[in-house]
Each structure stands twice: as C-alpha cells, then as structure tokens.
Length: 246
Image 1: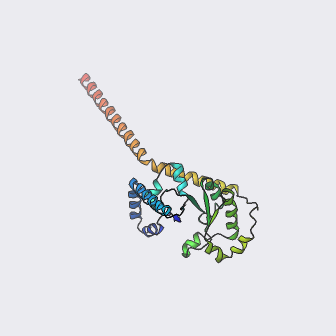
Image 2: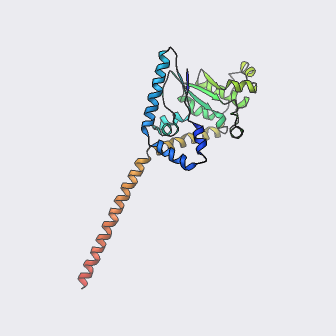
Image 3: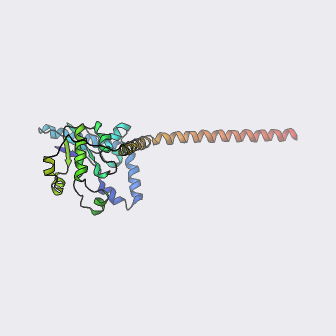
C-alpha cells in the first residue's frame, strides 16, 4: 500500500489571489508545532492498521523532506502539511519535469538519501498553464533519469505509466540499453547544489528565526540601556560643570 504525502497545492493556489490570507495562514501554521505531532501520530496509526492486515507500506515523499531532515527542522511540515513518517519503504519523488534546467543533477543530489527513487513526470497535468511552465519529460530526459536513478536504486518508480503509454515510451522501455553512458553537465550539478544549499540555509534560518529575534531584542534593549546611562552621565557632568562655574 502506498501513501502519497504531498501538500495541498489547491489550497495554496486558491489563496494566491489573497496573499494576505496566505501569509497569515503560513505564519499561523509555522508556529503550530503540535500540528506535526498530530500528523505523525495519525499517519503512524494508519500505517499500523495497514500492516496489521498483512500489507507492507510505501511512503512517497518530496525532496523537501530530505532538506528538512538535513536542516533538523519541521518548518515545511508545519506550513505545507507534509509529514515525515517512516514506513517499510520510502520513495523519493525526484521529478525533474519541475526543474528541467537542473535535469538529472537533481537526482544526483538527492538520490544518496533515498531508499527508492521515482522519476517523472511523463504526463500532462490537464492544466494548460501548468503544462506550459512544467512540460512532461521527453523520451531523452526520461531515459536519462531512469539510468541515473538506477545507479542509486535497484527499483525505480515511474510517474506515470499512463503518460508513458500516451507518449509511446513503453516499446522503447522494452528495448532500452541500461548500460549507456549519461553525462550530467557540470553547470547543472553546480546549480542543483546551490539550490539545495540555498533551501537548507532558508530552512535553518527559518527554524531559528525566533532565536535571532530574541537575540536582537536583547541586544537592542542592552544598547538602549547603555545609551540612556551614557546620556544620564553626560547630563550629570554638565550639571556639575555648571555648578562649579557658578
């Protein structure tokens, strides 16, 4: 049984027209640490029920989960409602169709953290605007991703087989040479690494923001106190000087 854990993007798409509500909701959720605990408990209970009926469980996670784990934070879990829950097998959804500019460099960056890898997407979303921005993988891109993913994972998932059928990939899959060489451009590797490091930095700063705010307020309060004392001493010195002149 597979549990596909993804954020409710429709909710955020609807709120994009009301960015004030979006920001308010994001801040509220970011401060709700109990949200993560409740989500994990609910998913763990569901996984135990599935296992009790004799099934193994796979969880499908976005790459952001690897970033969160590396940054030791739950910020994205709180904001987007994704849940870091473990099962019998974990599948990372390394869909390069959302980052065509990185290509297989995205897989190369995140695959070492994955048990199983899923590549994609080979299908259109049905939304012309989304498909224009994030077109499905071509055969060249798809076969490249399969080979790179297989370098790290003996099992490679595909999203989606319907897209493969629609694009005529199935006959090509049957005769594909899995030993062919794939070259990942150095620029792509550099860009993917920079993006990953950037995400890590944002997550770390976001999760420690409250400490920075507290530190800033303490420094500000100390600075104000020092300035007040300095001004008081200056006034006292002026008064003493005035009295001595008198």
